[in-house]
Image (cartoon, rainbow, N blue to C red; front, side, top):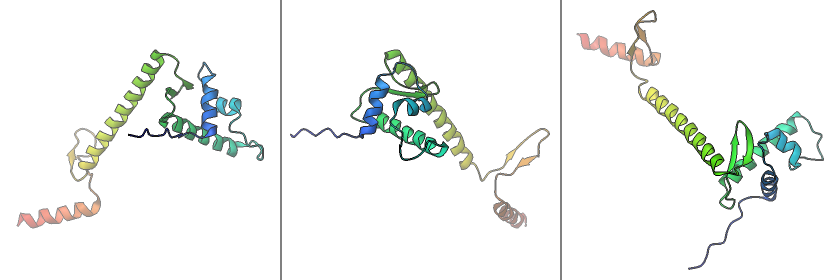
Length: 154
């Protein structure tokens, strides 16, 4: 059986970003990485707000590619504190715990919304100072429902 070649799934700028981040010990904000790394400068264009946003977007894309890379085996932490490469096992465990909790919150939100959508053709009673019924149907379906109920009375 022939060994499979290792595919380099990162470009030169992304590898240079990895080297830059490996030299850092503290969290860096995206703006600090753009300014300090020198990887996202374009000497042809003047630095302005539009180019700066483009650089931040490109940095975000590069960070995602590094995280998805099969070639790079260290954990890249991206959170509210900033960006850094994990240096201790505690950092890795803390990051994975926060990532898992975020995924579970999103899954719970998805679950609730899917049930709301599933139940969209139903009425529910509300007690108190609110309206006696909350309509979840669209107007055409309500009219059709009224016609069906009227025809069943006789």
